[in-house]
Length: 278
Image (cartoon, rainbow, N blue to C red):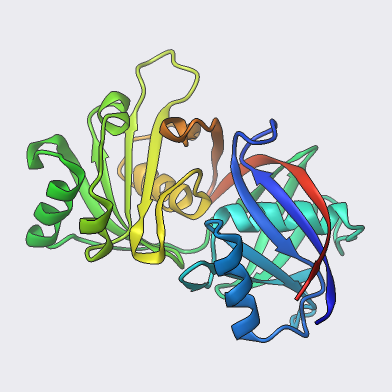
């Protein structure tokens, strides 16, 4: 057994217990893949991240990200939460005002604005959804096919089958059959709020295939949704998405399009600091 620094961070919120928690293990270079996976399974959080020395001279740190069911090449809330935890433990970036994270999809720039940080969304791959699969997913969500305004596969590391609905109330009303979804796909659902609302979109993420019935707040999904919505002209250049509402959370994801780059941002707060034996 060895002792490692440990931080538990709440991401996409400025209020503890209202966002998406992330477990962060510091200086984890000596840990095996099997030990990382075992700890991620034990925390039972949507993601657990492990900070390591970078192998790229451009990166400030390297991160590996695990769900209870496996490793991800990239994920949004672990990117912001890991950056927050690394800085809080005394990490000093090579370039002022910007942190460069190395992960499975390569180098991810993270810009800082006070307590809030934002990552540059990775490149997006998009594909149409097979009609038979879409029908099965709608049935598992209790949706009529006519309720879906658009559907796409979106992949920026994690791969999501995404649905656009007419309004936020329809998203919040979904009562999914998680057992059915487990054999189908990870599903993200988005719809606009009424004009004048605090947030412009409502998002939910159902990830039963990787052991997470509903993720409280999902940065990678919001990144790919933003790129999709921008590409189709369905979103303003800057907006805020709400997620986690049905779980009693108050996740807020700040999206901004700057030229060809989509920035995905949010606040993070440390809730637990200490050590872990692994």
